Image (cartoon, rainbow, N blue to C red; front, side):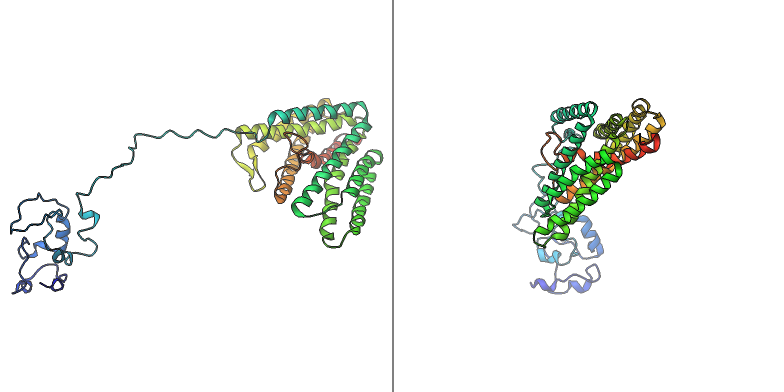
Length: 385
């Protein structure tokens, strides 16, 4: 028999025209009639049939239930979406050997990651205490010694900054005029006040322009631009510490400035490490959180009220609240500003001079922009002294 003569019926059943000579039913097939239209055939296919002896002497086992022995006869008549060899038509398929675990057997949850400070906390505390002792001793013994400490910190900070610029960006900001001019800036601010600081800043910028002329002109603009930026960013901002020191109660003003900045950083670190969940500036400094900023503001305002009430002459507690708020804002912005510089350079720290802290610039990041803010507010609250 030619299988191609059994195409799919168009009417959904086998009418009398399908029962002519040469087109008899296959052995074991159901009688003619509308009982075997396509939807009902699909409905009955999943029902298994108990195997038994073939009714017409067939010698093949059929594991498809009611499927007829002639494969093409029914396969061509079926809807293409439901052939006999699809998974829906195979109820006797083997059970998987490795079933998935039952939902009532929960797997133990992984332990949450332990928070880390990211640095050697013991070394950081030890270095911080040592630096604090040197600063306080020089501050209250001889003012000139403290001015020398500030000048040394400025020179080291300039060395770190210019070294990283050359290593990471190929920018050659001239260090010699920057170091000499930076130290002169701090001394001039202490001796001659704000006018002396501005004159020293202008002369330092001019020295940078002239010094760079001794080398080839390639890269001149970026080198001198970086040099002038470094002169303003490090020594000029540090000069405001010397301006505070020049007042009659200068050591107490400087101590207030240092305490408020340190307390602000400590509050931000403590609260942010314990409760921080919402990022403050994830693209600049992923470790800073809004909760940490709240801690910085709270700690600095409380410390400011105490310092203005008991350390600064003619100061009041409400002035300390405003001073602490301003310090928290400027210290945070200063920290973010240096984080931008370090991200642009592709480094984590500016140096390795201070174990647990990084370099000098990593400790000056919040102090430098805070110095002019504190100096200005103290002048407005209690005068220049």
